[in-house]
Image: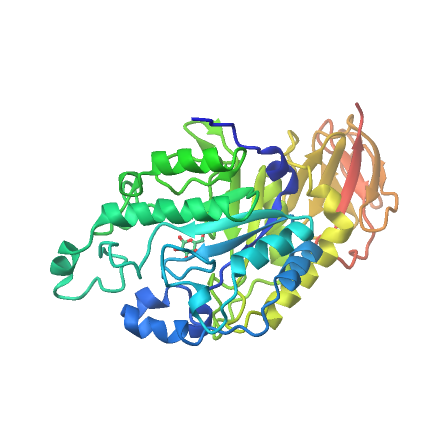
Length: 428
Ligand code: GLC
């Protein structure tokens, strides 16, 4: 086995990627699990397949949107749980090539993302609700059919496994270098809630699958959802409150997050996070040594809707000016005060102020460590001082601060940016 270790440097440097969930479910426009939720048969679901013709699809526009938001890698669903394939697979007819659209979306995606200078990632579903050999289980759309058990007699997991491995081989041989792979997902041991017929590493033969992946794409990064350890862990739709660990050891991690709770385009769901919250989530992750993979679910016509565009534009406005607190940055050994997140890159410490105080911000433990301070948005100097710990409060002067505290004086008017940042130049 030519198992070259994963190339993690770009990943910890880049910090911010775009997730794209796109497939037939974009036409249903009510969550990518609609086939499961509505217990649709393959025949019922194929109404989307017969009409898939996204006339507004332009992979270059997607890549450009990711890039201008400040994202450095893009991850596309090659196949989601519904089994529909966005590439020209030789192993099934259930591909984009057999729809009215008839174009290899994965090929166009890879080319556009590469051309934009971004890293290329694939998401690939282990589950497959379309494949005739994938055994019905508690997640399957046919789970409630009275003859589910009898139907399973004709289904052969070994044949499905061969199909799964074969498709992954196609994806990793037909499209040049692939930097990143997100498998989704194992739901056996430890999965809550327990699912009948749940599938796990043995069912996918994850060991061999992963071995093949590393052979075909040396250096590729693979996530942790095969039921065996991968190169990074993937907290989903929550913000870890500390750097993530496995068995007491720090691990690479990436939070995947949605704009409104759904991954696939979900027309009537208006639970949108605003730009401020999204930027704070990005910062909060980097402050804990994590990445953010932020999802967009393009519409059935292949475009980003207004909500997504507004969010990406707003994030881009912030990252363009404040990117140096994110890229190549990570957790700091210093502990921030309330409502503040620190990130650090070499001798620069970035103070992200989530709640803007009136003029004074006390930074514990930094008194002897900072040479110079400025606002990052406009490079304006920020005054620093150390208040005598024994000073008593007077009419016009503040009380003492604990030994070692650095006090900075902020502009009264909060800079008009999603999250204001103070850049501290640390003494070497
Ligand atoms: C989940 C869901 C899914 C989504 C994914 C993203 O496990 O099944 O629809 O694609 O996570 O992380």
